[in-house]
Length: 206
Ligand SMILES: Nc1nc2c(ncn2[C@@H]2O[C@H](COP(=O)(O)OP(=O)(O)OP(=O)(O)O)[C@@H](O)[C@H]2O)c(=O)[nH]1
Ligand SMILES: [Mg+2]
Image 1 (cartoon, helix red, strand yellow):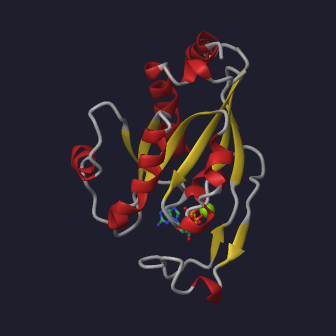
Image 2 (spheres, rainbow, N blue to C red):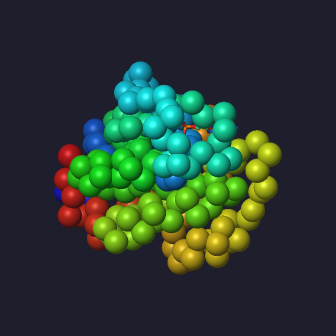
């Protein structure tokens, strides 16, 4: 990848210029944390979804604790796209949240430059698998804490301790239903990817 091209695109996005560039981003996290919602909120195209009803077959397998209102789940992926004024285009791939569909992750991760790991402070351990996966694969990620109604609010520093994250990993509080909020998460990820450089510089995003 030509990282300077991506860097230029972001700078240009901020300056209102026009440099075309694309990047693949993963939206991951535990079951029912709001991944499909996030992709749908920000996508400028009708998002591709692979939702299937939660059925009796999942009883004893799917962890529906705390998400009793949930009736469907992502079985393969979500897909959406967001363009910045500059021409920078992000392709968003939402991962399935349930363990039995994690075999999809390796496929989805091919060519991705970074990831958003969504977290719910009521079920914080659910995002450990995503964090482990991206740390193992040396893919830069940011934590997006989806602030559900009624969930206790925590400071980013407390969340950093709870997730055993180093000081560098950005933690952003967000509402997956709010476009501007999701945009902040993505901008934070792009900036972080550019600041780390190492992984991004080996990947083609052109
Ligand atoms: N209150 C509130 N509800 C949300 C928010 N984000 C998502 N939801 C709701 O939470 C539920 C789960 O959202 P999804 O976007 O399907 O979650 P997911 O992470 O894609 O779920 P899986 O693919 O099954 O792992 C849905 O009923 C959403 O409407 C949020 O920020 N606040
Ligand atoms: Mg989903």
